Image: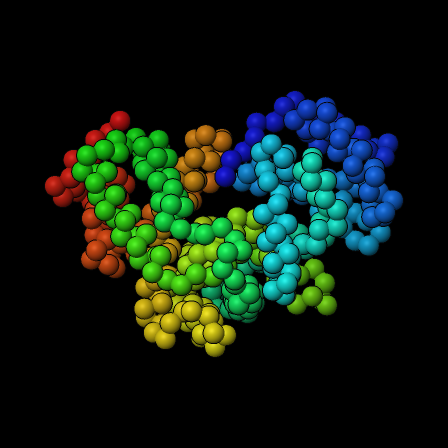
Length: 368
């Protein structure tokens, strides 16, 4: 997850209309204008309506444009920084699985421009009632429906494996970015030994679960409220990093959200409903909900350690301080899981000392 440093604004001229969208170079602006003009007639696009839609925690960005058939989305993904092929592959897989995902209407592979159908402008996150958890149950059950449908379509050797190497690379973001660069902790000696031991255990527990298709960011910010009454399904976005990994991952993402926390009774309610539905669908979630819930907690721990590192990187390297503002949420998730399992107490003590939550117990973690 990273962000470009834009060059001075290079106005794009398309169809005789100038937009205020900035480009990395006049050449890319001109290429976009030619591509957009070529689609204006066939796709019935109203070129003058082009405007920014949203940014991404990567080099991708999105524009919205009107057409005679309704609004459309344009993805701008510079090919030297972003590969659109995984997006196209997963989009096809999700369509085949019956999910509501953007339809690819046109794609300039060489230049990284893509015209997509528009799933609307309102995310599930925007309509959630954060004060009354139960009021959101229908939305979460729609999300569960989409998740089960996605997992049911799983086949091995289609998506990249969520294997030990990838899990370890993700975990290392925590010491590299959160501990060392954000907190100024020297990741060496006993602290390094503790992390190595805890990371090995976390990886072992998570890889013990059967594998299915994994979205990797299945949460309310990436689920869209249908814009038309004829479409009851939540839309699904930001799926280009999908992998083949533990069945516990996406439900952990949904219920232990990067930007929203629920009390455990609501988390349990939705997770039980997911487990029952997944089990009835023949998914490999096991026959013991308690065991499955423990698996979800361990998977969530891996994700929260990773995301704490990513958010520190987005702040310190990419100038996006709004992400690190959510760090206390991740530390709370990490501490809650670690306090529940005796095997994770060394990691709990480590985090507590770094955060200044408790007195050190025999540790001497140095500061850089």
